[in-house]
Image (cartoon, rainbow over all chains, first blue to last red):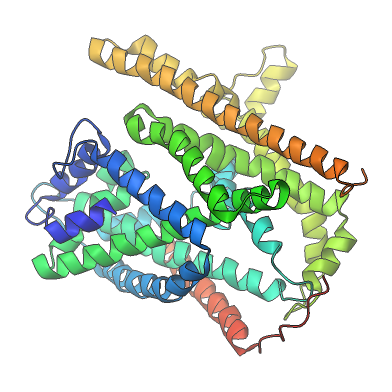
Length: 441
Length: 40
């Protein structure tokens, strides 16, 4: 939302690639302001949250209407940018970045590294990504599924939605930010800055090459549609809370929506205030990656083994506009849970250097199991951060790292508190159902 | 681009685009169901 405003204001006009990249760092530093508005990132966060909550309190019909126009627009604009990404070549190279090449970016993205298939961290990240984008493991799909009539189609719509998601991520996504970033800033810069802020650090520079008017239009369209894509996702994430509070505690929609807004405000503010201390990354790793895999594993076991694959198969195919191929029955029952289990255990106990044969050899010869710093266990123990603290010589860096350790632990405490609170709420709802005779268990 | 990366990119992008297009076309061509089918 802020970048839409900056695009209109022409903030990025005349900036070098490096200045545009640095602008993002300034923006997320709440002690600085890029517009003159104090605590700018916080202000935009609160405005965004109010819009979210207001839409939730009004119902989702309006969102559906806007999505019907906004989503195709995003794809059309994405196609245009993807074309630019794959045809940029070496034309974006400058004296500051003479090696910049979009081809190098595409090579970086598409050259197969088959060894990485043995790295559980890659599978964990891939599973987290796909579950997040398909809203699996967070209750959203279940909530929407509750509104589906018994003989409505599930199979064709699910396949179509999944592939549309893949088209946007793999075909469009891979042709836009990475090649454009490498095309203007070089692949070395890209490797050093890869992460959440990449699109914000690269796209404004591309737009600014098209002249002030087109840069403003493109910036408004791109960041506006990204904002809209984000808001439809966050609304989807709010829907399970609304459904739960309305169904189980008879809250009205407004009360449920504004309570959701309040919780998100309290939980989300630390990610804005302490973004540079890794709080956002902690939320993303534990809630957006590890937990999604854990809950998806639980869901696949519940679906296949508790609800029963025969019941599930009937539900999938009833009213379906296509018949799902029978091998998927086996895949859903055995392969999916086993794969998720391997991914989770593998990433939990990933050995040092991802060398499993050496790790097992050491284990059986009494030399223990050395964990890698990227394993879930070592992440939990903050091993990487402790090593940085031990090796830091600059007092300012040391102070920053120690503060980071505190904020990281506090962020995990907050996430754990929310999880426990939700468990308590579910238990209270269950007791209420038993008391009202709605559950016989 | 190196040949391996180029071949992989073209194969993946073509297959994903074709499959997406096929299933999207199936969705568009499937007539909507009547509204009175709920059993609850």
